[in-house]
Image (cartoon, rainbow, N blue to C red):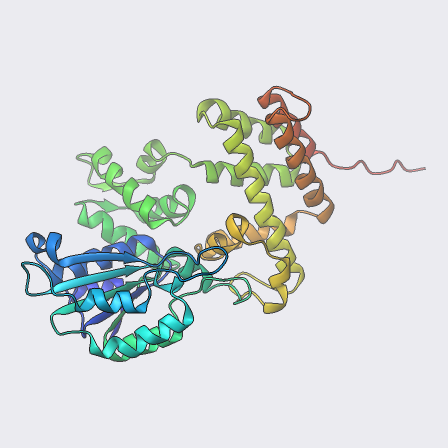
Amino acid sequence: MPRLSESELRERSYEVEGRTVLIEGAETLLKARALEGIIGRALPKEAQPYALRFLECPKPPRGGGAARPNAAEIMAAVQTPAFLSPNSVVVVREIQRLPADEERKLAKWIPNVPRDSLLILVVGEEGAAGKHLPKTVAKEGAAGKHLSKTVAKEGTVVEAARPRGQEIEAWVRREAAALGKEIEPDAAHFLVYERARADLALIRSELGKLALYAADAPRITRRHVEEITPRTIEDRIWDLTDAIGAGSRGDALAILHEMLHDQREPPERLLSNIAGHFRVLWQIKCLLDRGWRPGDKVPEAAAGVLLTGRSSLHRTLSSNPWVVGKTARQASALTWPTLRAALRRLAACDLAIKGIEGGEDKQVALDLLVTTLCARPRRPARA
């Protein structure tokens, strides 16, 4: 049975083989498009209210207990005849959360999916990101090996992988063409890496605006992108961290004030983004010191130094290689004393902003933070 990319699936007009489909990969936009296309091919719109059912595997409950739906409930949903429709479709989201024993039961049953039903299993964002980390870190991995093997044998696997390198710029050109516009290569590169950080959903949204803004112009140029595509807070955090790493206090304060006043970012959100970025830099530097390099898998031996939850590296390591490489360059440029001091000062600034300690004005607290982060120890005077 086939293993298709999202673009290959689109070329086949979303026709799949078998009665079970597994959609996996790191790119949410492409997974959503694949899912929409497969459903549209399998069921006419007028039948979808009666013959389309969605299930979602939840995170394991605290303190143990059974998570629902389990394999039996999924199987029951697939075998339940549709109302007013000869065919039915059951979509199970976050399939990577299904416990291992339930996954084995479902995989064993998949060859018995009825001819008038289609079962679509979708791996969530956690599962896609988890592929980049060791098992000890990624508690919720991709779809289990039993499901993957069974669907590959009995049905269709769709890989919604994020385009890499020149592929992503080619994707941008195809998306622009679908909107009736050409986009210059320099404009495509600038949009991908300087404005949207290779986020396909954001790129697609901005292309829609650019197509309207370019109006009667024959193609979208870099000037168009610069004029209407805003810098994101993440972009400016990169710039701020670069300035801090270089000890450029004036540049760092100018970027900070732009985000506070021009972009009207709340001080609390701004501090949270700065702190999150420094936590990522700390973890990346730990990996670099252990021989890891961008593009490598994270070694199992490094699992103990990485954070979990919202501060984990899942999102960063599942990003475009350009983002991973830039993060590594920033981390390697910062010394351990600078990083340790940064985290202490971030904690102190958080207390000051919340009025727990110090009670300074919020902008003053952020100004002091950036000023101290840019400070460099003086060299001892020569005798």
